[in-house]
Amino acid sequence: MSIFAALLLAAAPLPAEAGCAAPAPLAEPWTSWTQSGQVRAGTQADGAPSLILGKPVTATLTPADYVHYVLPPAKGAASGHGGIFTLSLRTAARVGIALSGRAWIDVVAGADLVPSVDHGHGPQCSGIRKIVWFDMTAGRHIVQVAGSPDAEIRLMAADAVANQPAQ
Image (cartoon, rainbow, N blue to C red; front, side, top):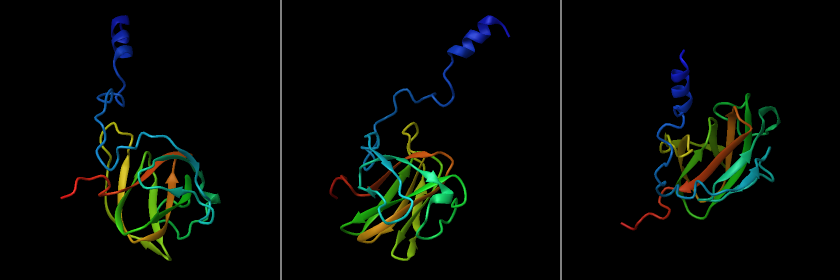
């Protein structure tokens, strides 16, 4: 390879950076995704940290062997890292839970898994890898993260109609 070709390759943007120099602002309900907050995920439901709608956190997760899930996760319980959070709702709502990395997410209400109603990816270059939507009743829910290959993950719960214009 010539020195000129090597210099061109060195100056070229990395594929992950291509098109991400100035991502567009996030739409509701994800506008606060870039705010900061740190938390250590719980290893059991008692004492697990609370998620607050619209407030993202970067969570330190625990190796899977040390997490005592309320119900066995649908995937990922035996590998990687995981953690437990609580989420309380005053009224029933469709809630999206966004994750920055690869992991499985379950929501538990009482003794039952809450089925997801939709899922997808976050906007390109946003840092949101995926969003899973759940129709949740009023009350306290357990949010379980499982199977993360990384010991840290950013997550945020958001009400689907938060800050949306009235129809």
